Amino acid sequence: MSKDVEALQSVSKYFTEESLRKIVARAENKSEQEVEILSWSFGDASKKGDSYLSTVDRVVIQGKVDGKVVETRIVVKSLPNNIGRRKTYRSAEFFKNEINFYVEIAATYKKFLKSKNQLSVLLLPDCLDYHLDGEEDFIALEDVSPQGFGPSSRQNCPTYNEFVNILKAMARFHAVSFAYKDQNREHFKTLASSLSETYFRDDLYESWYKRFHKRLLEIAQDALEKECSGTKVQKRFNSFAEGQLYKKSVDFCNEWHAETSVINQGDSWAPNFLVRDLPNGQIEVLMLDFQLARSASPILDLSFLMYSCTEKPLRDQHFDNLLKIYHDELSRVVALLGSDPQKVYSWSTFMNEVQEKFVHGMTFALESVVFSMLSSDESFDLDVIKDDKVDIADVWTVQNIKTSENRKRLTDVISHAFEKGYL
Image (tube, rainbow, N blue to C red; front, side, top):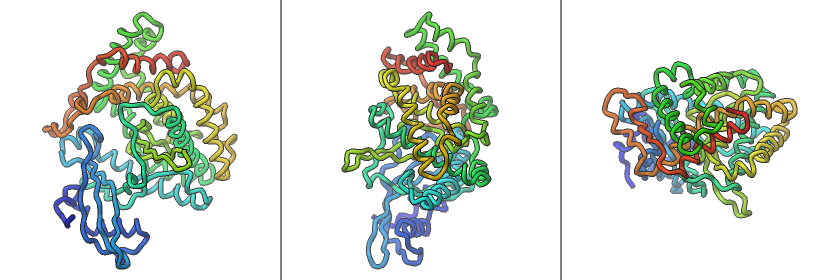
């Protein structure tokens, strides 16, 4: 290990030795004056295709506190150095959203939970430092891998037990929002206003997503033709005009201050949950990646989680019970935090929203299910972007699904939404 200043500068010109001192001080709960930085080293960066919107580095910091050598491990997300990639994927907009989530919302929720003596309800990585100006942005988060947390593979769906634990973690996240909103209504509006919609907006459809969405529809239509030809589900899916499903999600994502709107994670598929096994046999779940965070109905998170992270046998056997598990856990935590679950989000209100808004998860899964089936060889190398800005459809060059098994993974999602009356 050494003091490689150039490595720090590759993240951001504002990511300096002073940043590392601040990070170690916060991690050790000391003042910056009590910390001496001895050295730092960069580990493996994110693999090709793992993070479209940012560059991700693992950094190990050696410091000295009170005469004792300490090691602090962090994950640093920064804007891509490739300007074409940065502009193509609107990285600065997503960064602003995530930094505001950690600085404004996560910090507020942590204080709220501490006041209730319930810090264990919500597990998020600590934000140890950040810079936000749209040009040199970075966010430094604690590296939770030494604590035993690890990701699910992008290709594999969680087991039933893993999924139930992820589902309950999401329910607790939404419950904290419901309780905080119930008890601090005006400040919740301020928190919600610190976020912006980064994915489902009318202007983004025309300027950013239209060609790619059309390609996703073509892939789904091809899969339906090969696996469900002549069926009612194929007829129903094909009856939607181009862009109509996306614009339904635009409407759902534009209800920032509706009575049932809470802070959503926004991108709730398996890679954005880390899990670890506890000695008592239970599974603990930590949430991360809030670049798509928004204020909206919790059904948007729930539906995307369900369709992006489960397969047909699990849904066929457990779907109705999974809805109950989610709502029971949400209600339990709302009550634990001092609010009335029947008042803030009753079962009947929940089920009405399931019926109305669950189609969002299917629409977003048209993208995530296709991406989840990509092998490492098929992932997109975004640094091949050489121009100032290109259309994302020219980078995310997804193809029709080759195998019947994988096509059914997608058509099963569409069929489930149709059979339940969501589509």
